[in-house]
Image (cartoon, rainbow over all chains, first blue to last red; front, side, top):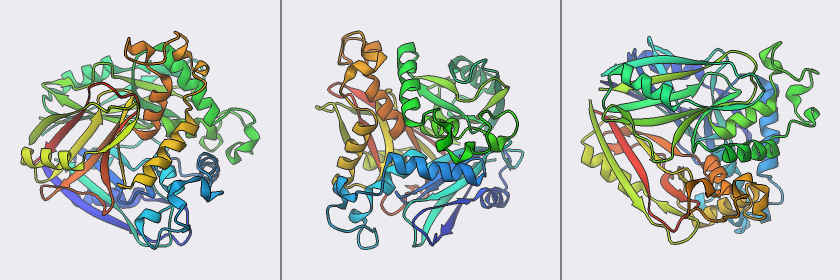
Length: 148
Length: 148
Length: 148
């Protein structure tokens, strides 16, 4: 069995953002030499997500709107997590906005994708995305590949 | 290490539907010859889901009702994705209804299940389902098995 | 390829509760002898969850509040699943509350985590949790490890 580990780093300049990382994951698979196996791609932070979707901007705008409806930014006072008076997560992980965390929960921490014939075995429109919900600092994604 | 790949095809006659696929996945495991390993079962379309639940009709009715509340079909104008004037996804993937995509996001793209002693290692009530949110055409699920 | 299977058992005295199980999963990895691989950790019941989050009480309070908003306990009559007149799940799995099941759907059944150098390859704040949504009885989590 072969295995391969790689980190992808991000520094999204806004609070929120979606980045297509399909090519980076495909390159990690090439580097691994694995022909048949599984790749795990996961955010390493509880305010970021890895998910699979179509690469279409209007759809991502809908996601942001829908997520905002599920876990609104205002008023922050409804979340216990914000009762320290802080609205950002820079100072201490405990002050990290709860709304970012619930958005990440809905969007998911990780995806597992099949590797077949040395390639990502995705559906015709599937692309892998990094979803940021509390940006403006360096964060990372883990790519772990096992197979043969 | 052994690996096995199989596709399951569906053509749900309605917009939405849930199908128990536990037996098909179990048969793929038998075909693989894997005794100890993991099976990944994932939808290959961004408007369909694979999830695990109890096989009970009332519960599925509740899911549909609850999902409809989270991501209502009407009014479609609230979603950017529908501003092309199209309400179905037949013409082009970009016109694909955003609400189907957010429902799939909540229900999940994939499950990973353990294989133990050559069998699906599920809890007593767990069953694997295909969830369709934009049917009336051929769509597919990937089953990928690795192990020994 | 090595594999290892272990069950973790719980009996949460309340209807809901979150338990940090990171140490138990790490111990299962040690017992497996796997240095490079994947660990699948999944609830074996459809009213319990395994998820990854920060280990911070205020955040968990926020989750409970947010989940309650998404799938409220009252009024139970809105769910078909409760129309048998039963409000608990003790008698029969079919009477199991739908709201517990939709909460579990949002929180997720399973996590897959990388194993690197014989250890859980988690981000700096990531911890693995068992989430109970219908407690007061014995339930279990499956830990399945594959790798080398």
